[in-house]
Amino acid sequence: MRDPGRPASRLLWWLARKTFARRTGSPQDPASAERVLVVRADERVGNLVLLEPLFSALRRSRPGIRIGLLAARRMEIAARALGPDDLFLIEKRDFMRRPSRWLRVVRAVRAAAYPVAIDGSSWHEASFTHNALAHFSGAPVVCSFRRPGPTLATHLVDPGPADEYEVTQRLRLLLPLGITAACAWPRLDLDWQEPASLAPWLDALPRPRIGLWPGARKAENRWPTSRFARLGERLAGAAGGTRIVLWGPGEEPLRDALLRPPQTVAAPPTDLVALAGLLRRLDLLVINDTGPMHLAVALGTPTVALFTATSASRFGHPALFVKNLSVGDPAEPEEVELARVMAACSMLLSAKMGS
Image 1 (spheres, rainbow, N blue to C red):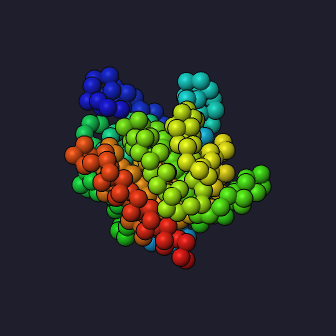
Image 2: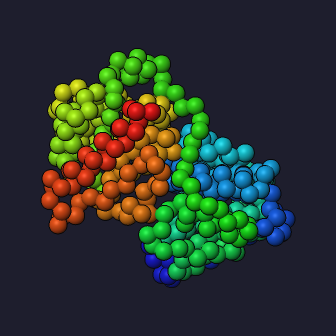
Image 3: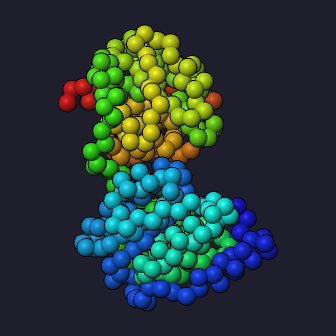
């Protein structure tokens, strides 16, 4: 909600406060809560992956805690990867299309009677949906970031600097629970296996297997496709092996533009499980700032992450097997930029293939 201060918006927030106003959980000091609900109901895999350190910090700081997660139905696989004790899946569109199904989910959450709910939406912009769902849970304590405009939260947390690492920002949501957690990048230790049909195809590809992902949800987050293509040619000459061009729905033109150097193939269409299995088998991934980048890091894939319009310090991950590069500066010659990216690729490949 970009303008929560408008009269119509304020009325919406007021109506939400009056809806499901009865608290279902028992009031208690959040610093002693043993059951917590986390709300993250959008449909972006990266946003769920970025919550993993928060889940881990809760479990480390409070052994035996029970964590519930209210997530988007379409994100079920990613949501389960976080290992919540209780998982509630909601389709936001059902509020208008299938209100009875939407209401069943909210009632199930309320029946669980969590004493604490965490609005896990972004710190920089108010999300009415997340704030309302956290309030509808019935938890007497609702933690959220402090933002301009109205809120349904009871405990507000001040965000850090705008360029602070995104994981560090999200860990601030644990402060009302008395938890101060050290920063750590996301880790998903599940045994993501590529499907049997994909395994023989991968096994036949010469190593190193280098993934190139030229797409991103936002066009401004995409490094120029021509530079991805030139990088692929240089990697073919320097490293040999195979370049695998990865892509998502609607990114077929970007994929096809990279299928030029020798031993360069397109990845087959994948669902999230198959994608995770494929990412785990790569020796290197070069990718824009997009959701699968966070998934690859969480799986331990050596990754060169390219940031054109977003902050590398905010969305890049401080892992030894990750190189976060700001690119797209008009003042930097293309050859110099390509050399920087190539040097990062060479460093990570040397570490991977030498291990």
